[in-house]
Image (cartoon, rainbow, N blue to C red; front, side):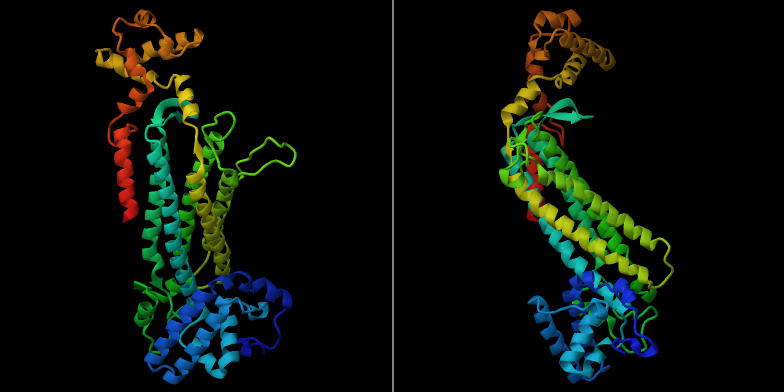
Length: 458
């Protein structure tokens, strides 16, 4: 039989079954991790006297040779060898002879593949944390340039109150900071070692799992072998965090699409992040933020897909678990591509301060400040709210804005108004007086940026 497990069987595997059950088309991404796990495993086998030291050294040399071939893209992975583990083991036996078959002593593909995915996600999670750092740095640099730049703040996509543009950008900094913290926290659970659990019940060989954990840099060894081979919580957690990250990317992308439209014109994206139309030469389409927004659905689908796979599985390993990898790989690649594009797109966008300021001048986003003004004069807030509602209605009917009204017009609504009302309504004043911690006042935004820079330095 050509299969490494073929001793029990009397027939060759049906070709359709072979193609349907094989995972090598996608799990070859785990090649480097699979070899790393095998190197630690065989070193432990030799140290524990489970196999002769000279055999362990020969296997180690063979694995290192295959590792070089993988790095050089010189390996052709075969469907008939099913998965990354069997492909590498078969290569090893071809390279060093039957002694290569000793590598699999004391382990199963079940604990092997779980280990590979822990190693893979540990590496990718660390890389994604750095990519989020890059996006945060881009946000901070733009924010530092626009502490005094004012933009309409929105609720319900209706102009609400003016805010510092830096304050708006920094809201996304803190979203990504929480994402980064979630990834860092998840590493505690990624850093559990399944290897040594065997197929489900452990092994009869006197292995040293703690030594393998030490060699591979794992903090914890799974205390239950059945849990170890069937646990995919760490992938679910990653897919969940990935979905949240993409949600934040999508929200910011939506802002960029809106802001760069002709209707808003608050920002202009660099030409290198936009495309044109095949029929309308005047078009400059924000394809990158649109696609970032669209790709968010992929990550949601990957999360729901794995949740659905796992929901009905009895212990321990089931072939269904082969479906855990493609979604994980896809989410990793989606996050990598999205974050790598987002940072330079933020860095290179042009902020149109004059357009933003004009928008603030031509709205009623300073109305709340009149209510606060009247409250300081002794009028109950609810009565002040009614007065302002009437002033806004009058202004709309008169085709005016609040700063356009004369002092006499204000006094018609309340004798509490004084000449200082115009200072109160100035956009800079409206922003500056919101000086509570976390507010949009320039003083608070500067503190926020300093706090953010401290986070990045750590």
